[in-house]
Amino acid sequence: RGAGGGGGARGGGGGGAPRRRSNLAQELDERGICPVYDPTPDGMPRSLGGKEVSFDIDALSASELKPFLLNPSPKHAGMIECRIIRERTGLNKLFPKYTLESDAGTFLLSAKKQTQNKTSNYAISMSKSDGDVRKDGDQFLGKLRSNFLGLEFTAYGTGLNPKKIDPSMAQAHAIQMARQELIGVQYSSSLWGAKPRGPRKMSAVMPRVSPTGERLVCRTLNPDSEGLLPMLRAGNTQLIDVYQNKPPKWNEQIGAFVLNFNKRVTMASVKNFQLTTSEDPDTVYLQFGRVGKDEFNMDFRHPFSPFQAFAVCLSSFDYKL
Image 1 (cartoon, rainbow, N blue to C red):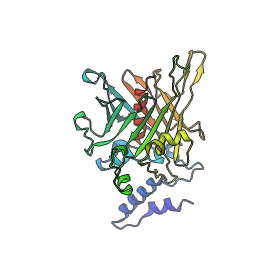
Image 2: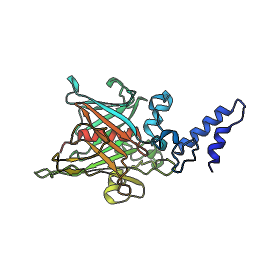
Image 3: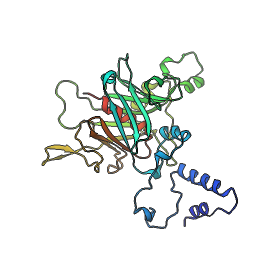
Image 4: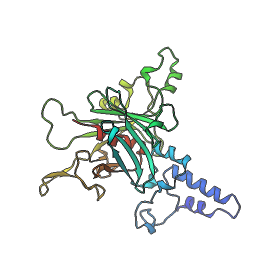
C-alpha cells in the first residue's frame, strides 16, 4: 500500500527530518524506485500524465557528475536526451573532437581521436580542453579502441592494459591494476568486395546490470578469452547484457530504410541507429542520429551509463566499412 513512500514523506518536525528524507530519497533512487508514492493504477504520477519523471542533469553538483557519467543511469530518469557536437576544423580535420552535452547545453564529456596509433583510439574525459587529457589525470575516464579491421571496438576505464602488467606479479594484485572493460561494439563485416545491401548491423555488449542497478565488473588478465566481445562471440551470456540495432523498415514512398526516432533525428545518415534487446525489441535503450552537419542527438536510458552510450556513438562515427 505504498507505506515506504508515505513513511518517507511524513518525517517528524525535528531538524533531522529533511536529511532523513533526502537520504531515503537517495537510497530509493539508487534502487531505481520513485520516491513519490502515487496510487494511479500504472504507478506513474498523475501530474505528469503518465510520462517518465524528468531527470535534471543540469542540477547535478560537481561531486555527483563523475559517478553519474560512469554508473548505470537511474531507472526513474527514463530516456535522457543529450547531443554530440563534432569538431573537425583545422587540426581536428583528421583527428576530430567530439563533445557530449545535455539537451540544455551542460558539458558532460569530450573525446579526441588520438594521433600515432595503428588503430582508432579515442581518449574520453571530463575536460573541455585537449591539453588536460593525461592518462593519469582525474579528468580522464577511459578510452575507446578499435581492432585492426575497425569492426570491433572496446571501451575501457582507467587502469593498465593487462598485456603491460608484469607477469611475475601476484595475480590478486595484478587484477586490481588491470583496466575494466565497460562496453564492446561489433559491426558486421562487409569485407571482400561489394558492401552488403541495406543497413549495417551492430551489437553492443556490457557487463550485466542486476535488478538493483549494480553493474558487474569485467576486469581480466586474459582479455582475448574473457573480455566482453570474446564472451559475446562464444555465446557466454550469463555475465553480459547484449543489445542489437533495430533493423530499419523499407519505406516504399521514400525509397529508403527508415526508423522512427520520434522527431529526435531529422537527417538521414548511415550512422543513425537504435539499440534494443532480443527479449524486448520494442524498447529503445540507446538512439543516436543526425540533426545537423556536425550535430547529433544521443538519447539513452537505464542500464546504459553516459560513458557507455557515448562510447557506442563514437564507434558509429569511426566505423567506415
